[in-house]
Length: 614
Ligand SMILES: Nc1ncnc2c1ncn2[C@@H]1O[C@H](COP(=O)(O)OP(=O)(O)OP(=O)(O)O)[C@@H](O)[C@H]1O
Image (cartoon, rainbow, N blue to C red; front, side, top):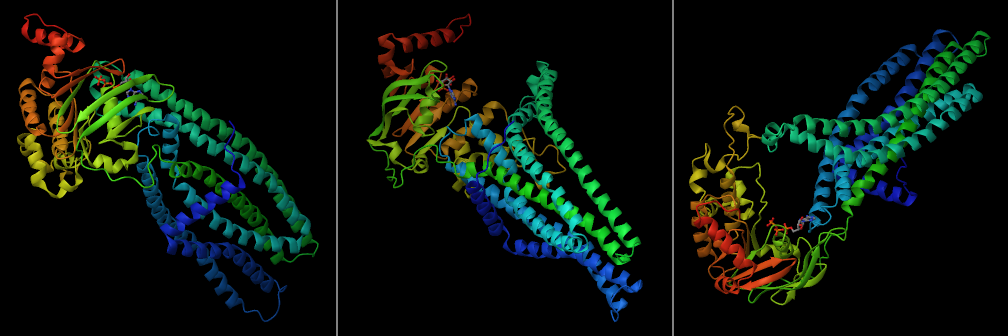
């Protein structure tokens, strides 16, 4: 496994960005932490130096006139500081990490929201990076700063102890120093491997999480039990976990081998130093105080060097991890957004698709192959076609989640690429076929259609009434404030296991419709299979309401129930990626094409005694 390379320029850019984030998130905490790191660095050297002085005075080897009491008090104070400082630092550091995490999370999500389309979000490689950035984004700044301050502390301790060692025996001092160089080299290599591992593991982790969710989550619980899928998914999950652990294990073993050898080397150097000092003291060349400070200095230098190497390695790793975050926050918009976007005017004439070609990526087949279509303002257009004909894809293009590969979509003659996508979407209302049931309250589930309605309960209720779900929601344990989920609970509901409710599929469909109704006044209302989950009576009722609502408005209605679209102003049938038929119901029926065939088939299914597959 080869690791990602970090050029000095890239490293410097990441370091600047990471430190900048830390400073912006917690300026006070950063200063305090640095001061504490400096204090923590000099404390052990001071303890060793004071201990030597005390011993020298006691054994008569020290200078006369030095007060033992003062030395004792000084030693006690410095030792006390040495005990308290690490705890204080831990607290300050945790506060800083929390502040940085919030800032990093916000920036990451701002960056994701800048992706106005869906192309990049649907790219598995980008998803891997995004997940890695989510998990490790905050580690870049926090580890960089924490380890940089730790390095300051280590350098101070190292400088102090090394000074002592070199003064007593330059040979041993240099030996201790040189013995640390292989550790530094190894650490840098291991860091690169570890950073590469994060991205490599992301594949496994996402799939592991997916299988774990299937096993413990509610959505798949029915099928898992009925089809007996538990063992199958469990084994797949363990396979992913095994793959992940295999990668980690290989790296851990490499680390164990290398660090074991280097540890032995360090111990041998330290042992040789001890033998030398004790022998020199026995021969009268060193005092007892010298022996004590020597014994403190050798592990002190090795410890500080080890920490420094570890910290430099961690800084390197933090910079490599920061790469994922940096890539995501610097990601170019996935759809071109004009610098000077044109304002989106109210729709007067209509929306025109001119020779629109689209496929989800060059590796995917064409879905639309030259669609020419006009959606006249103030009229209802129905879009019909077999499964996979491209109806929902066309809706996604109208919302500009993607751009056509060839051809244009024009809003009153203006190419929609000249608009800001957010401004265009402001003019649209939509109920998607795969609408999202949120684990929120009933009122919030409707108000997400137009967040301004959060503070307008009457509007929310009116929309629910139009969608025929008001009575259901009013009857819930907490009315519109009832959570539409059994996964979470609100504070006051903690002791009430029944507080959240699960709606039926059709009831959810109506909630989604209510969301759409909140935007019924927009220039274009898109309804993709709005009645697929409704019972016959509700469907009839809904289409009567929709007819009312659509009157004089521009709307696009997609449905497989051809009876529900027959009164649309125009019916457009998609087939083979093109518009195959277009016209009012009667005209299409008389033409005797694909639409007429499907309509007759469905109608016969209702009339005949024997059931007919539709
Ligand atoms: N995000 C995607 N990435 C790749 N291919 C996709 C994606 N979404 C849809 N497709 C493919 O595009 C084709 C058209 O799908 P689309 O959902 O537009 O059909 P549809 O007419 O709405 O079908 P249905 O009646 O079943 O809802 C299908 O072959 C589908 O597999």
